[in-house]
Length: 270
Image 1 (cartoon, rainbow, N blue to C red):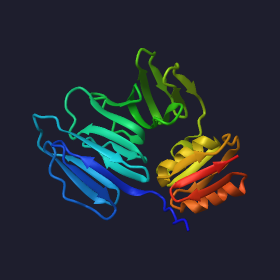
Image 2 (cartoon, one colour):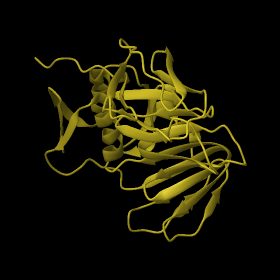
Image 3 (tube, helix red, strand yellow):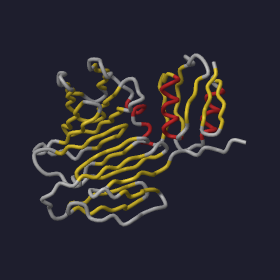
Image 4 (tube, rainbow, N blue to C red):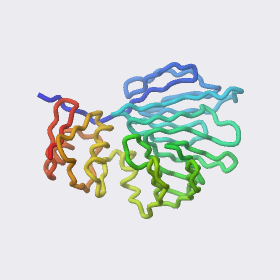
């Protein structure tokens, strides 16, 4: 008998400036000590907020990390809101000082930036730097994805790569790059598809099978195995992100995929 696999949930861990590690989840709301003069609160399930207090001479960094099967939201001290997807990490100063506001991302996150032209907001991710110009954008730089993507949702953003030309994105444009390749720009991207994860959905608009399965692996914390050639089937649709894994697999099987579940292992046959 294979136990049901539930969907991911609000869970993460927070590493404080002194190295202390705090577990965050829907059932646990520990008191978090002030960080560099900034108050840290948990006003709701899956949400962490930083509120500026007295300015500290020392810059203190925190890091929030979600496991596979986890997600979390964060409001930075400047009011910028971040949605962190599964298997992702964000390193950030608890208060922003100096001429810029800079954070470091691995994995995937959606940003709604509180614009301040006097102190630009920059995200370092996948060897690139994304700078807001009054912006909402999604960044996907998972190590297991063949292409890293930055998708602009609103306003504009400047993308700078190591040794590459600067690119200014417009809404609906997506900056794409591979580890050894040049940056390219895709137009008229389906923005709803890109940020579906933030809105509680698994969306696949002409999604190839391996890409879809990587999404499933991260959200349900399962391992994908192929016993032969990878299926070339492409999928279109939207599924609720809060359903059990068995419902996802049933949908794929009805649409031609040969899949079986053995605990946390998902076996895909030709």
